[in-house]
Length: 334
Figure (cartoon, rainbow, N blue to C red):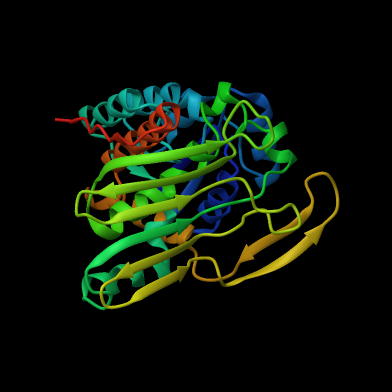
């Protein structure tokens, strides 16, 4: 079966990772790209030699779409996709607040639309192996998870939109913490109960660029994560994605993107770039979503997973504002 696929609002840099995969897979027909921002849409269309279509035309011709819009504009794209009855794969975060996230989840459910979240860590070979070792008892009783998912802050942030509160409604926390939060939920099958966070504004931005978060999960596991934009400019832009799983029998360390080479380029957006050459978690996640669309099962991460991530992010910002631990409030989608 060939699935007709479209890209909506390719503002997020990760769209550049998915479009080429769609173009080369034999089970996908990339119908095109749609965006109500001519700049991002035209640039992506030219860069990938893909058709740029009006949104209504694209949605009439596809079975499924991936949404890569700015965080603050998710609603319009969810409304368009659910009205057209097409399945949705959404970049993280699903929304900038839990109320919107819940409404997107219920809208997709009511429209009988499959909703998958772009959570590549769930599809990474190293992290999947770590989950197997947790489940077979090799680590013993898990007591703590320490995660790092940091990157450098370059001109692409300033001149793009990820450091603009009008588009992102947050900084390093909303940009990266949902990935580490989701990985912890998936590894433990537990929910976040309480968080404590400290944020920094190292560059004087309107959004946070430094954060350290600690939390307690419902199974008693403690969690610490750093998803700051603090990788030195002399280091690679994409930084790291590392986990330490500390148990009663052993400590398991994971470096998801260790298989990589580096390149250097000049210019204002230059510096060292990391190029991962191991098994592609992006390709694995897309394959999982396509199978979910065909079979009617849930994707590896569904809309409720996206909602739970946003609930934790809201608690992180509340904790930082109050300077004290706060509970994570979970809402029902029934």
